Length: 359
Image 1 (cartoon, rainbow, N blue to C red):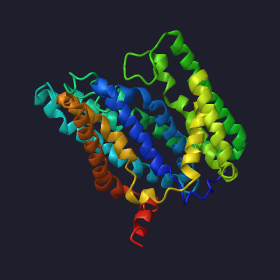
Image 2 (cartoon, helix red, strand yellow):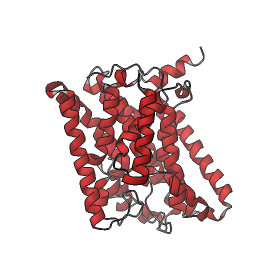
Image 3 (cartoon, one colour):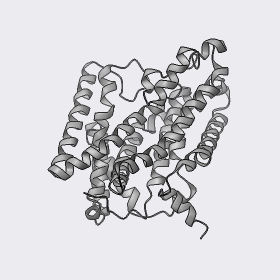
């Protein structure tokens, strides 16, 4: 039950940056609607990226809990890791975007402004996704639509202690199988209802999609991927001897799912990709440079929205792409060094790696 696997050498930080980059590339296409970026929207799958994040999260967060001295210690580490940067991007966007509002200052800093701050600081982004008069001429007015996954991540954090307790009381196999099946029932049940109502894709940026399609991607549905990550951890010592076999099975399941089943089996091949990429061949100490994946994920949307609002999409597509990617990269690096690292717990492996780097 305890996360005792040796993770001293893994590529998970690198994989998370790749997954965050996939989301960024998809949103370049979705938010700008430029034909030059249409292939990015077609081939960069946010489905895969977000679900891959949740698998990695299940693996690492469950291990973090089992290695924590107490629930308070575990919760403190989680808050230190995600909330300072999250708080920064919410408040910074709220204050910095007022020049782009179509409303006068007195109306901008009114009820809508405080509603945005209150809802978003509590991870309830769906209650107030937009700031007064900001991005109204864009295709979408949401200030940071990528943050919808954070409330799910927080729900996972709070669920882990209960899951661990139940596994100890009733048995890991029974509890994890039950959680997995209930999550699948939610996910595929609402997917079926969404298909009946002829809703759009569950990951469409169109806020008018049906309630079924929206529920299909929320907390209970994503739990199947989080629990898959936990199972990778619990059976790590057995799975690590079968990388080649897992690679072959993963490839077969992906091809079967992609061409015939329509992502019915995605939890299995996504978990396989995470496990094989993360642990088979070690690429080196990627984390010594820092973990920029979180910063990239939470800063890119408002940057793209601002560029669109300033009509910089009129630039040459290559110039726009280089400009937008440079701004995202710079913002992520600044977020890491100016905010995230200042709040990391002393036991964080990022601090340990960075302290050993000179040696």
